[in-house]
Length: 503
Image (cartoon, rainbow, N blue to C red; front, side, top):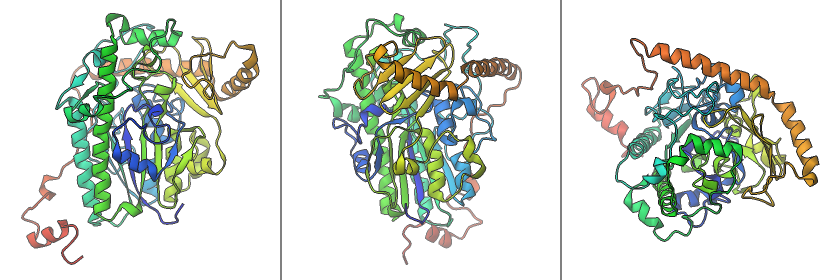
C-alpha cells in the first residue's frame, strides 16, 4: 500500500448475488463502469456477508463484528452507539466521513460515526419489524417478504426505490464536487449506498431493454422436489403456497434485477466520472461491495435469509493507490472492511482488535485468514443459524435442523449435503469442533429471544401516545446555501467554481 492516506469512496449496493461476480461482473451483464473498475481492482471472488439480511449485515460491515456481538439480529434490532465503526476509526485518523443512502440503522443514533448524512434512510429506524421466536411460524403480513415482487416484476419509469437511489446519487455527486473545491483539507471517506438491485424487480425501460436476449433468465437450479427444513420455512414465510410462479414470471423478475444492476452501474459511472474530471481519481481508493445476495429463483427461493451461495456471497472489489489488481480466491468477509479501512487510514485498531471478527484484507493477501463466519437469527428462522466457510467446505448449523455440509469446489450449486456421508465424517467432525469452540448456540438463542421480547414491549409502548420518530432528518442549512446577503457574491462565485479561473 502507498504510504499516503487516500480519499475513500465506498459504493455499497443492496442484495447483489456474488455468484454474478466470479472475477468481476459476469460476461452477460451490461455494466461497463463496474467492469472497468474490476480491471483495476483486487477482486475477492469468495466474499461473504456476515448475515444475509440488511440491518445485521450492515452493522457487521460497519463494525467488523458478527451479529452475536453487535446484537443486531434482525431488521429491527438497535445498533448500539457505543460500538466503534470504520467511520469512528476514520474520524480518529482525521478523515471527513459522509454517508449518502441506505445503511438501515435502527435506533436513535442514525450516524454511527459519520460526520454528515446526506439523505434519510429508505427503511424505518424503529422496532416495528421485530420477529418473534416465541411464535414459530407466525407471518406478519405488513412487512414480511412475499412473492408479489416476482409476480409484479416488469417495467416502470419511477418507483419508491428509483426515487430514492436517484436522490442518493444526486447528493453524492454534489458532495464530490464540494470536496473537490478543497475548502476542507482533510481526506474524505464518502459512503454511497444504493437500495438497488434489491426487489421489487421493477426497472426503467432503457435498462430493461438491454436484457431482451439474455440467456440467464432462468436459474441453474430450479425448485427442488424436497426442501430442507429452513428452505421450507422461508418458502412459508414468503407465502410461496399462495403464488403460482411460472417460468415467465421468473424470467421477468431476473431480467428486471439485471436491468437494475445496469441502472446502478450508470450511477456509479457518474460518480467515478466526477472523480476523474475533478482530478481526485488518482488519490481515491474505491471499494465496491453488497450487503448480501439474492437467490433469484434458485431452488425456488428468492431474496436472502439463508446461507446458500446466492444469498450469502457478495461482490467485493478494492481499487486503491499502491494495490495491484488481481484475483483473490481466499474466502473473506464483509466484516473485513472495517480493519482494512483502519489500516488504509493508518489508524491502529488498538484495544478494538480482540473484539473484531473481521481481518484486514491486506493481511489476507499476505497469507490467508481464519475461516469465514456467518450468522442468521431473523424472520424465517426459529433458532439462530451459523455457518463456517473453511477452504472449499461450508458447514451450516442450527439446533432446529440437520447439519448441511457442502464441498463448494466439487459442488458449487450445493446440491449434495455431505453431512451424513461416512467419507466426509472427519471433515464434519473438524468443522463441528470449530463451531463448538466459536459459538454457544443455546446462549445465542436466549439472547435473541430476550432482545425480541424487550423490543415488542418497547415498540408497543412508544406507539401509544405521542410518537417521536428516529428516522434521520437530513439537515439543510438553507441560509448557507447558494447566495445569501451575509455573503460576498464575488467571493462566493469564485469559491464555488471548479476549477477556478486562475487554477
